[in-house]
Image (cartoon, rainbow, N blue to C red; front, side):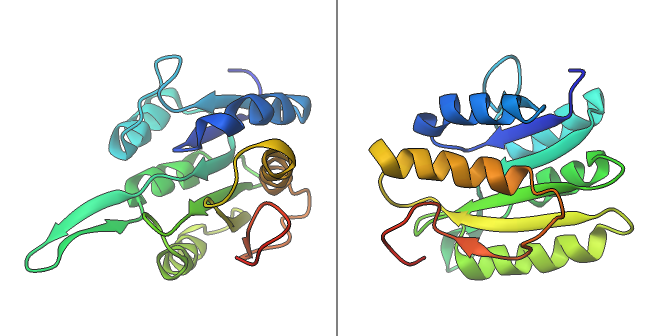
Length: 174
């Protein structure tokens, strides 16, 4: 990996080809968790990042960690070890993170809390963290718009916008 890495975790399959093409065209090396020896479980991904020490330009994560709480059943939480490892490997001038959310995994309040926690831990590195809705159509023009939105969010030159929640395709509110 000689180019800065774009790590895609828990990203739906229909987006893979478009993201690979779009991110490669922007000078990034897209790596999809679960392919090319890259693990899928968040703690294993954190260890994978630490063992390879790549320059990370962006992380796109759609995976939650499920935590069982007594009397409450299982609930999704952000995979903090993955995000913290990503912070350690961000490019010296900073990078972008995009958290994908939906109605079944990570939701808007969880992502807002994650954004605040990561902003505090970013230190001197510039971190641009936005979110995009995962629910909705995954075909046709909507799929193209989602890919374009994700590529844009992964490669924001001035790290702005910051802290936004986007739907990734036109036609419906977040």
